[in-house]
Amino acid sequence: MTSRVRTGRAVVLLTLAVIALSVGCTKQRPLHVLKADAEFAAGQGQYDKAKADYSEYIRRRPEATEIRYQLAKVQVANGEPRQAIEQLNIALDVEPMNDTYLDAQAHAMFEAKEFEALTTLLSRNASERGRVEDYLRLGTYAAKMGNADEAQQALLTAAKLDQGKSLRPQKALADFYGAIGDRDRQVRRLRMAYFLEPASPDLLTEIRRLGEVPGPSFAVVPEESGQ
Image (cartoon, rainbow, N blue to C red; front, side, top):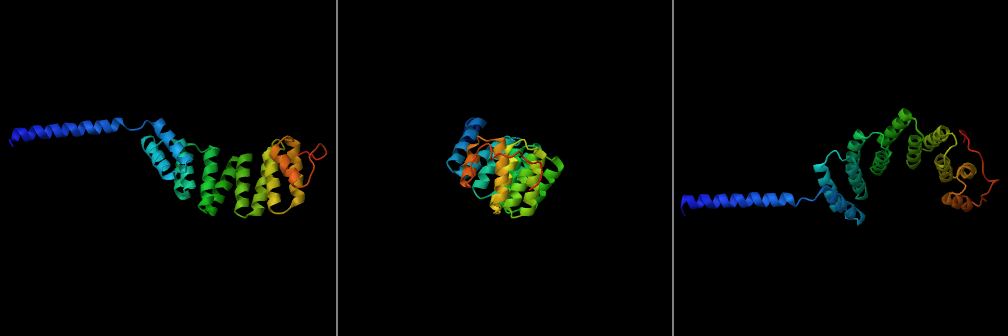
């Protein structure tokens, strides 16, 4: 084989390789397709496939915090909460006031049994921001971790900050007192919750489950503080 023929064949092979690479690149899934595929896989419990697709999306769009959040949810569902924490740390660095990401972070840290770090994170957020939502989150996880005194104080603080305007703090306190077996306080908080939202189906179910009768005389004006 002459050198001219070998050179010509090499050029042809190189050209074919470039074409093949170009075709491969053009077959790369668009981001919206990649996201849809990941969501479908996650919904089917195909967590490895979902993780691969979400990870590819992030490789191409590392600033996509919503996709990091979705990846973290899949990782937690797949028993990988510590990997989820890494993704959510990045998402929260970009959007520190995003309560959805913070809720997911708290859940991942709880699943990873990083209780001390979780308490520090939620306590700092509550003291620095002073919002009802932050104290409710702190109280909820303190209760889950078995810290009853801290949970009660955080939930009472949430109720005080809320000034008797919304259902959630009262219902959270009712659930807390129910969990520790304090029926009197549980019912009292349910009465306050009923005053705020007497038509809530879940609330009505809980009131009746305890053998109480909802109605005008059951309602109690919410307190801003107290137990």
